[in-house]
Image 1 (cartoon, each protein chain N blue to C red):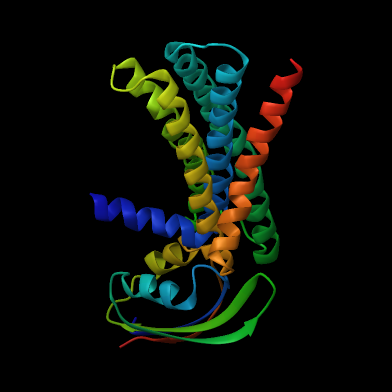
Image 2 (tube, rainbow over the protein chains, first blue to last red):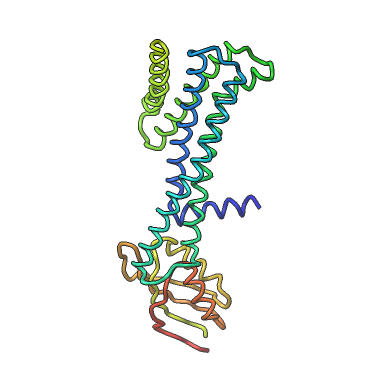
Length: 197
Length: 80
């Protein structure tokens, strides 16, 4: 069953070029997920004394919204893109490609990209949110959870940078640091904003 | 029908190896060989030779269509 599924996914990737798109969506949305939670954690902690429950509720709400917007947005955009490719190929072939494995793989690729997109944001966002779940179950105190969450966010961003560096075959550390800088910029901006509010 | 030479237009993907492997799984087919005649921006023109015993031409045609290809002509046929 798992072999069948893997075979089918690898075929979708090969016939539709979805591998590259999915990878792009995964990284982009993992970024979104982490930075959104970073913003919520920072904003709620610096601006006022939010309880762990508040942070978890806001965080989970944001992640669900991102997952839904990810699924629907990516599916529609990707479906349109894949259908255009099928039409182009049909024009070149001077024949219809309905029911061919190419058309089938391309249609499934849109669903696959949409799922990857939503899961990436959701799972990546849960990482920096996890210390607050620990607070809710009485394992951590709020103060410590804040710093652990910041640490998790920044290390996740660094890891994503490493991953991007590996894809680009460029210097891994520099790529990681660039990605880390995005997190640092977010922290700086929100901290500055809080000084004026 | 034991031998068929087909002129086929196919998209670049699936590639020729996968295309021929899939054709070799059609009933009656024992051997498939292919030569690329022309490569265009979106398509390949290939000459495919199919050998076997009692080759099911309809199934073969259907498989080519499923793979996104189109048979343009049948250039050689052998019955034994």
